[in-house]
Image 1 (cartoon, one colour):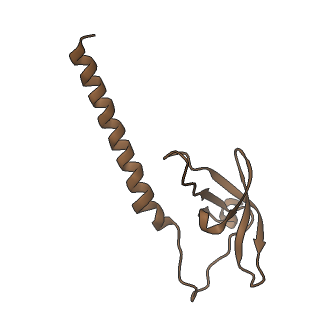
Image 2: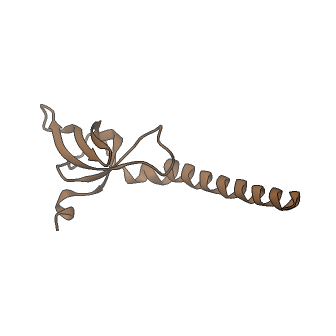
Image 3: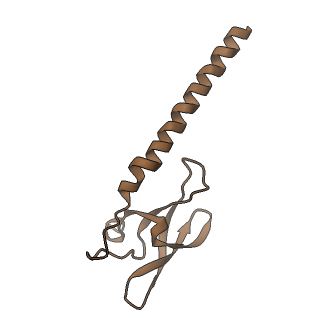
Amino acid sequence: MSNVKVREINSRKRHCQSLADMFWHRWRCEYFPGLIIRPKWTSETRNLAENDVALLVEANTLRDCWPLGRVVQVHPCEDSRVRKVDVKTQSGFLTRPVTKLCLLEEAAMSQR
């Protein structure tokens, strides 16, 4: 291969990589926050429940590798609000606060 061809291939590769980086940055910063509904404390919202499917928000994970998990146990507080759950992922069991989860599918829908 000539030097010109190698440079052209490297240039295209860098361009594709920068487009992918831009897409995932915008997805994480603009689209993803819209998936997580966080109303003020004045309105009542549904607690996470067992068998809910959620996306685990991990800051240090690669751009397209956030793990999916299924809620296996909830830990309600004295006020009956769930603020912490145990999640089963492909790599094992984790305990996470509900603020680090994005509900994708409710349990009632996943059991149909």
